[in-house]
Length: 331
Image (tube, rainbow, N blue to C red; front, side, top):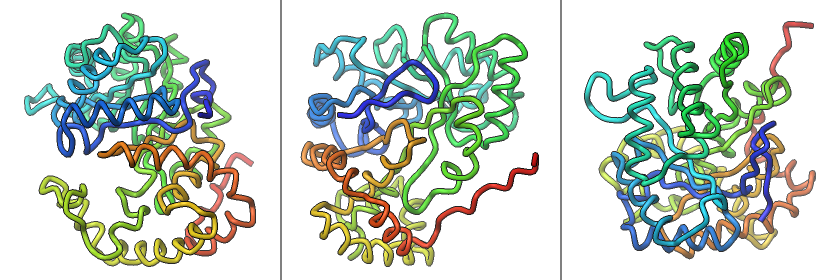
């Protein structure tokens, strides 16, 4: 396993990590979840990602139970959660001081932990001042309930504002961002955040590297039973897969298949390896509903060195979606 710095922080996270979104509580029970987590841990994964919204808190409960049952040394693993969607009450969601503190306490109770290593603002909250959120996250860290805080799907301007407030008010600034990043969703990581990597040392823990399974090739002939798109609660995702843009993406996946075959890897391994080649990616969050999927995903580390500049150019010629560099109006 390769380990990377989380941006400019001293923390090192495995280049491939393991997340509970969709699978825990929705597709797999605790026994299967535990087997998948063990397979990932045995392969060198040290970062396990979660959120209060995943399966309405059940994913946190399952993950915490698995970690206790495995008897892993707490300092050997990095655990995260994300705060935003905590329930149906008027103050059970968002990034107010009240919900961040109460949501963090509830997440820790579900996980059976004294602290998480990373805690995220799961989405930007347009109804709460960013300064209130920064103060709340700083308090969580000062109380020892998390070591680092970050954001997920925030704009570069919102992250920059949070960082500036923290520096001005002598608070703890955000360390990392969790954006979607894959062969089809590139602009934010490659273009919008480009200056933040150097300016504030932003780390990234990317989600959906397989574009919700599209980049595995399994949806080329429809939606298989048992896949996430077959779940009733993911109808919104199924619709996006079947629209015109989704169909164009599936055509590109079909064009990538021969290249993967040449490299002696699966489409999933190719897609994960492509994400790993980005030096600004701290870790690629993978998911799995079977131990065999974990093993396949981990082998992407062996594929990444095969992605030479020439191979990457062949991929670009298929994707045709490389973001244009962001204009620097300061010059």
